[in-house]
Image 1: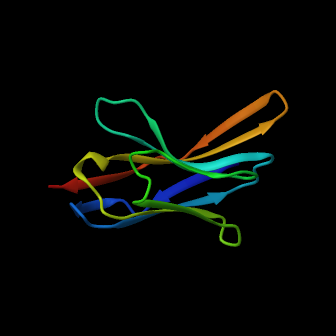
Image 2: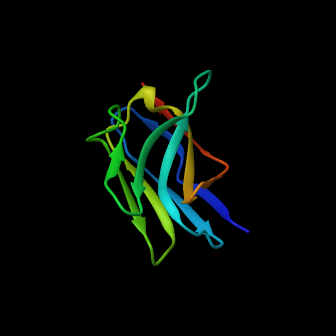
Length: 119
């Protein structure tokens, strides 16, 4: 059974930093991307960043230059280093793994970790 468990969220002041970590357990085949999404109150979930198993790393415009996504294959984790945080970064952050094999596609999600940035 696949499990994604996020950690590292919390309360931080504007300009501060946090590091989110996603611990992955279980076996996932044909990984397409590993990444982070976020959902602010009253808004839709949006992609923050992802690492493609074969391909470039993607960052949303609103975090490019401030956030860095990384993958540790040995530890089976995907981290998101968030610097220069802004109040608009306040949201629940979710780890995601997308797997794709032919016409079959699956998405795995963690339970989320809350990030609150105070002004």
